[in-house]
Length: 199
Image (cartoon, rainbow, N blue to C red; front, side, top):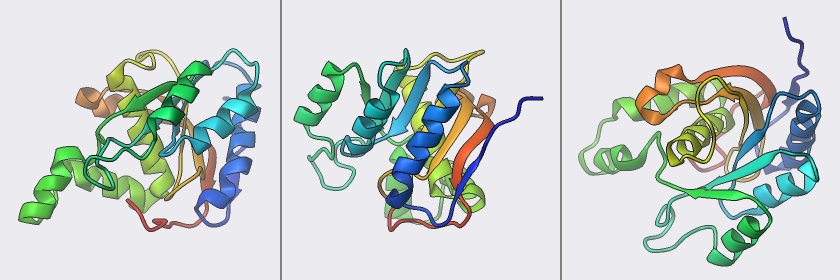
């Protein structure tokens, strides 16, 4: 049986980002992980992760919102930031949210809730927004081909609103095989739930 340290933060939100990143770096020191997937709307959290990882032979994958997520025709991560991250070896994935996407559009127009949104809400209600985001961005990265899938583990980092408050070691899966996804270790998570004003 493997032992792991778990960082429990008090309340969710970006105030926990530096502590969560430090916990991720500590876990990387134990070996066995070559990829860190981090949710990063504007690039800030990805840049912090990259600096903290330093010269370790670990690939950083930043997953950002699809263009139009907040405002039609606009991208939250600017092209300049995306280019800067790419120059520093970060793979940036910009994709539709796998646990909402078109389903959310149907809900907004016709009401009710989809099965995909029910999965997202179950994860969010049980483990918090950061865990839901961590899982979601890893599936998005897997579907884009940015991370390996199969008998492999990666670290997934997400947050509530902005920044990072949750990190875990996962076995990735593609969206069409979602139930093959496994959360294998909790590195950090809030002890209390919260939405951070954003889903």
